[in-house]
Length: 223
Image (cartoon, rainbow, N blue to C red; front, top):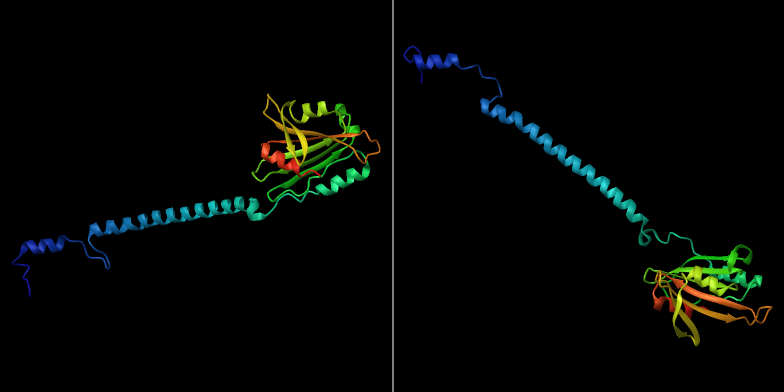
């Protein structure tokens, strides 16, 4: 249909006042919306990328920490040769010692060492030490000496006083407990049967952070 612009001056003015169309463009309002969308998309994309980076770093830290756990990596400490240390003391003839043997699963030796009487000061005797982590995750140790028992109790059991006795494998052990720290200990004196001096005695002390049942279990393992 043909429209005569001369007969419709309003349409003619409107046609002349409108700007020329640009290919591919829409209304002015649509241009503003389209201009805003890329900025929003970029913000969302940046946020997602940031979350991915943070997640990757967190996962890496978790993997490093998890790898250090014993159940993942295995035992970190090398095996402690308690039998070797005990045998060396026995062969030296320093004094009669008892050896922990037959402890059930869950006990793990953490340390074993020997000091001769020349390096123990006021104790005035040699020392054999063997330490363990217990099945409950606590700690227990046995120390044996041919030195002064009174000094040994003051140093190794925080001066614990006798609070009772307990029979273990037919042997009587004294129970000691420190009033200052609560440290518990079991003690027994073993008379030598094979030492060069028949009257020689070994003072045995079992102590640690473990409670009575585990201390008694360690004492029962001494042979």
